[in-house]
Structure formats: structure tokens, C-alpha cells
Length: 386
Image (cartoon, rainbow, N blue to C red):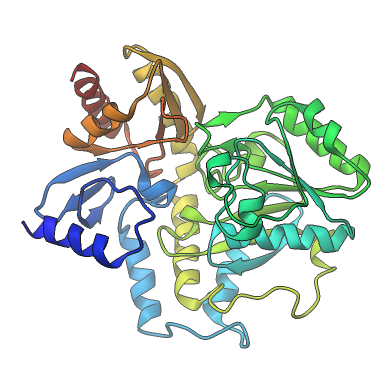
């Protein structure tokens, strides 16, 4: 009864923009979340790839508690120890050549900043994005989003859309006014779509040859998700700008833009800003997340567990294909998988559909072990039987 009242209250007072699983989640620990009456759910969605180190990792909790008792917030108008240490930690694990970071609050904000920086750096205006992409819901980020259902309202007109994975499609759209090419190395919302490695390398070559800024939106793919700390490392291609968010602070809201020296040195005072970007509290969580990622070798674990999932699930009926890297996987079924997702929840786990209704996305915390995968496999089998 209490759960029903709370769901009604949230529907009454929150703008109804989300289709929600009918669960009131009030607690999380490790690979599991718990609803208000104590039911336990194995989380293979990770709050949309956000719970990277699991729910309420004790080291994250300790770091945040310590910062809460010390200083919750002060803006970027002053220096701060938490921000300084977090920035250094992030640059230290970033791919070679990235020497500066701009902190903000979300992936959309990071992508907005990245595209503005690219336009200013090149003095050009057009940006090539990819069909099937999703970069956020602010005006600029939405203008770069290639999923039609989200492209509503007044959008910017300086964007062109290429077929993801088709280098000739990209080349056909390049003009003298092309400032940047932006893409997700793996398209999540589109159903975990990735291209051949040569595609990313050709993009890099074209951008280098023509003075175009290459932006990797690694909001979902970074921080060990694909089996490497960054997808750029997985595909052996270095962009000029990398955007981050989602799981980089284990659930606290933060975005970041990583910049190479040639671009960073062109940014002047006042050109970028964010009141809450890089707050002491979220920076404490970011630094602690990095420490856990490195110490527990979560990128390697993601690679190993991803391979295990592909092998374990390959014999399930009706699965057409399992694709993706690490713990960013898509299970493609022959038909609409909506009822399967509902049955998964009824049997004690959480997963998510993509915009392609026949693809279930698996984005679990990177601490997943074989025992968790085996448990999810059994739940999936029950769901398919039902």
C-alpha cells in the first residue's frame, strides 16, 4: 500500500516525462537494489550505466561522508583540494595527450561544451553527427542526436547526419565549414551498435587531414565499461575531445570534458563555466571512483565478465545476436522484447530495452561476478519460458 501511495505521489508532483518500472527502490548494495517492502533485485541496468562501482560502495560512501563534514560546496571562483586532486587523478588515467579537464554536471552539458569548443577552435560552424546517436536533451545536444523521436522543438540547423559505421557517408557530408565530427564509439540507445575498428581509424585520419575536431562521446563507454578505461583505447583511436558523465562518480551528478593541449591552450577565462561543475562533493566521489577502478581492476573484470555473458547466453532461445564490448552488451531478439523485460523484473532483476524494442541492454555495475551472471541467466531463462 505504501509503495502505491508513493508512486501516485511521484506521478502527481513530478512532470510525467518518464515511463517507469513499477518499483519503489529505496536501498542499494553492491549488485542489488531493494524496494520499499524489502524485495531484492539483481541490477543489470546500473541505473543507466551509472552505478559503475556497485551501489553504495563503502569507499565511495566514506569519501562522500568525509567531504560532507568538511565542505559541501564552494564555486570555481576559489581553489579547492578535492577538485585539484580529482582533476589530477582523472588526467592521470586519461589517454596520452589529454592534459586538461572541464567539469560540469551531465553528459548533455559536457557535449554542449565540447561542440562549442570545437567551433571556436576551428572557426567553423557545421558538425557531423551520426544517425542513431543520443547526446542529451539540451538544445545543442539534442540537435546532435540522431534518433528522430527525440528531435522535437526548435533545433539548431548546423548539424548533418551520417550513417554510423559508413565512412563514405561521413565523407560525403564534409564541407569547408565542418568544425567537428561527434559520435558515441558504441551507440547505446540505438541498441548497442558499434562499427569495425577500421571505421574509427579512418575517421581519425580524415579529421587530421582536414583540420576537423574529432569528439568521442564516452558518457556511457568510459571508465572501464568496454573492458578498457576508455573506448578510445579499446578501438585504438585517439579523438581530440572526450566527454564523460554517467558512472564516473558512482552515482553523483558530474560531467567532464577532456581536452588535448592544442585545443586546451586556446580556451580563455570566461569562455566556459558551470556553477556546480567540479563541486567538492562530487569530486570526492570521482577521485574515490578512480581509486576503486584502478585498485580493483574493474576494466579487466568488465572484459572478462562480458566474454562470459556472451558464452553463457549464446544458447538461449530466440536470441538473434549478442553484441557489444565488456559490460555494455545488447541481446537482440527476433521480435519485441518488452514482455521479456517485464518478466525479468517479476523474477527479481532489472534490465532495459533500447530504442530498438527487440534489443535488451545489459549495463550492470562493473563489479559483476560469474555468480551474478549465472543468477541473471536463470532469471532470463524463466522470463523466456513465461
